[in-house]
Image 1: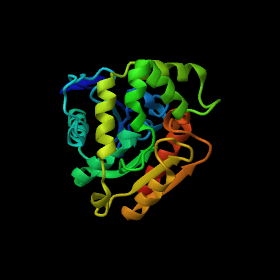
Image 2: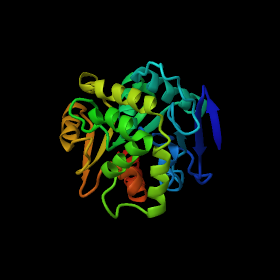
Image 3: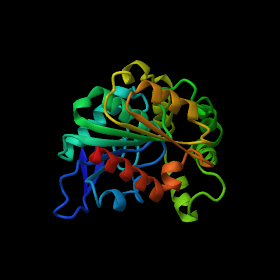
Image 4: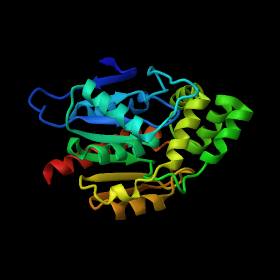
Amino acid sequence: MPRTKGGLHFSVSDCRAPWARDTLPVLFNHGIGTNMDIWAEWVPIVAARHRVVRFDMRGFGQSAVPAEDHVWSMDEMVADLWEVADGAGVERVHLMGESMGGTIVLAAAVARPERVASVSISNASFKGKGLGELAYWRTQFAEGGAEGWSRRMMENRFADGAGEARALTWFQEEQARTRPHVAMGLGGVLAQSDLTEALKSLEMPVSVTLPDSSPFVPVAHGVELKELAKNTRLRVVPGVRHGLPFSHGVEEARHLLAFLDSLDES
């Protein structure tokens, strides 16, 4: 069921059996250049066991697009996440984020730990220092516009043969709708992010999944995160680039469920 709150477009899906509705919801946060439909293949799998809340980040999909002089901040993105949670009527949640969405859910957990049962991130980092490709975005937009930037992003996200052709076409077309000022604004926030100190006090379970071939996030960042947050699991997926949550949606959704099941059993 699609809804809107504070200019943020979100959707709630719930396919749980009537006798199995005691699980906590999962709130999904996508990254730069796409929308909540990046999770489309995850929904039927996860929603069979947990209420699923997805939303279009500010500036993407059907959510409001800020003006070109908008001042972006991580605090704003965290506030957006919790506004969606409130709009969906959920209090305590599992958080799942990909790319910058992963950084946002980590920051959201730091800001409101009492509302977070667990955090899962994919192809994401806790800091901007050491991330690749961001420095080239301004030139890519200037020389090729959003379509040129999107073509380069597709090369960074997907290896040859990764993903269904029509799915990749959808992804590129959606990504090419990205407004340059939105991508550059959020990219600047991501580049300046650093949750190093904050993560030392994070106590809830954290699951980190990284492709071994992302041009953006080095696996070393996952190793560092595991050392910082005391209750962290790290899984590295070989032979995959930055588009892991999309190109391997079904498999990754099952891994998320396995992680959540393990928490219920502990």
